[in-house]
Image (cartoon, rainbow, N blue to C red; front, side, top):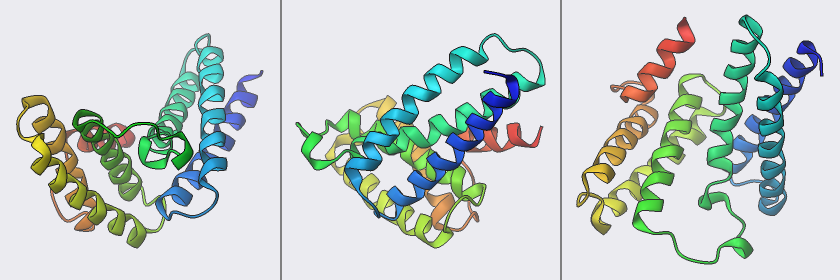
Length: 182
């Protein structure tokens, strides 16, 4: 595939992953079809990453940036939260729930900061995640230093969204936004 072909393919995948992300946030559409398409997108990203590994210069940076954005959406789309009910086989452990919340809150904060989607829907999702964070703390999220760290970062990202950007950002979100400005 040509460099322009890869760039166009990534732009198309980025657009589709954002659409699926917003659909999942708003709990619309067919969950099973969205899950299946997300798995397909994940496979396509792996192929594009291999193709891009031979490129150099600014085109590679552009492609890497696009791939990272798509992968960020896929983390959320392929989390247990979005897994179709028929695929859920066991309940989530505390550590899995903390890691899922950590990833999901970061993706939500990034999309909020970039104004990718309906801000009121994202703020509502942030409120839901905040309730979940409180539950995880009650389940023992304070007992392990690593879980405390993850929940602390998630809490900052959630607050950033719920308070419409009028609160401090997490270190990871601040770094992400700083990198975008370069």
